[in-house]
Length: 186
Image: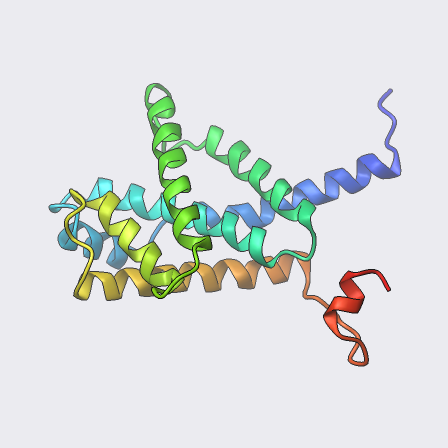
């Protein structure tokens, strides 16, 4: 018999919350966004555009969890849930799974660099340029396609942040203490 300890129950509850949040990352991109990216950067290839937007949404979901979660365990749980869901994603043909995993890993690293980089250009600007580079031959990254790419990422980040708060809750800080005292355990 499997012992259903309090620790096991807590881990199970964490995994269920992570799966619920991660499901947001696997929503299909809006048809208008796919059409826009296909015509703006992907030489009319809607399948390629759709996959680039899927990868982008998955990456943003992970980064939002890393940045905005109430505890460090959340991002680890979300990463595990994303891997689990992606491993059985029916949109990926079994013989194409290794390629899809490599493509996502490449994009995840590029998006991570853009998301967490500091500098003059904003996060959305950097993310938009990465999206356009992966969707095209790498030469298109400015002008009106960039503005729309920035909009797409802002929408993904807002959606992920909203779902993260719905699933995990929002931070409740006492008004009489600065956050550094609460975090520091004083």
